[in-house]
Length: 399
Image (cartoon, rainbow, N blue to C red; front, side, top):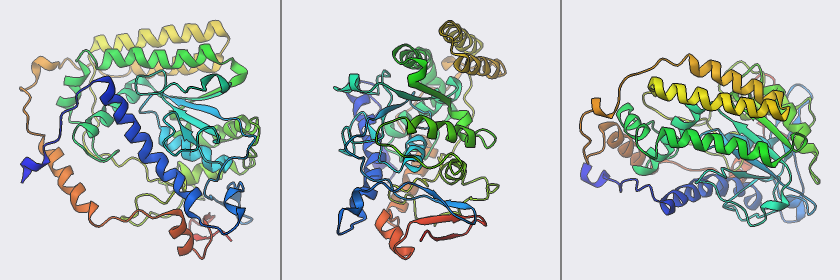
């Protein structure tokens, strides 16, 4: 009965938004905590740091993250929503071997983490009570014409009680939200506020700004992973994997779907969605139209905002951020303008689009069959050892 598929509508209140991101943080980071609590060693081995390691024949072993040492001093892992936070925390854990946390403290580790994932000062972020104790920041930036639609997809999925990263909003839904008071223009301002907050708060020697595009790109991802190793190695209590092995870890965590990397892992069992906290999450499986049209006015507004951030970075002497903003400006200028507005759309209805109803049916059917494998189960399946992705792409026990 499709009437049972009707969800509560997205209300847009501050409390609803906070609830949404608490749910998102809890979903991901609760899984992240599985590795620490479920390995089940009889002694204190579960408290020892075990980082990823290179294998003699090539490839690398990516092991579960563990509790931080007592002298750890976390950094912020900051990003505007829709900029790969889930992927980033898995990459950080794989490179450092230490569990990450979030501004909502979803996994309960508090300050005993290598990094604190946060969207603050975005309204869906949360300012820590101990914010002033963190004096460094790792900041991931994504082109706003990509990050904002991705964020809207989160809102759309929550609105219809869909799984995260399962379905893109239909274009009509995008346009209605885009042109609403809390839509695209408001989020462009939030995107700017987010990056400028970290530029202002942390000096250049206390921050590392990287782009989502560079982390996920095959030509640049390995070098970004090396930058990350150097940055996190400066944190007390952190001994990350060697720079030479970082590209292999990047290929395992981020680039496993390309089929071109020597350490690319084989596809997961289709029922195996997550493997404890192993940083081998399947990438976003969102279905649906990727078209996210913008009017010429909206394109011009984004370019103007990026120009102003570029000038700010130039005045601060931050050539890296200045070049990144110019790159985004060039990309946004290539976006074709679309004249469609809300006035051109059919009237909205209270019945979810058919694509949503089908996604909910699929989700209900899949939920009855899916098993989420814990880190312990995965290790048991591999002879008690973490998985290793070898030079020829085969899976074997790391030991």
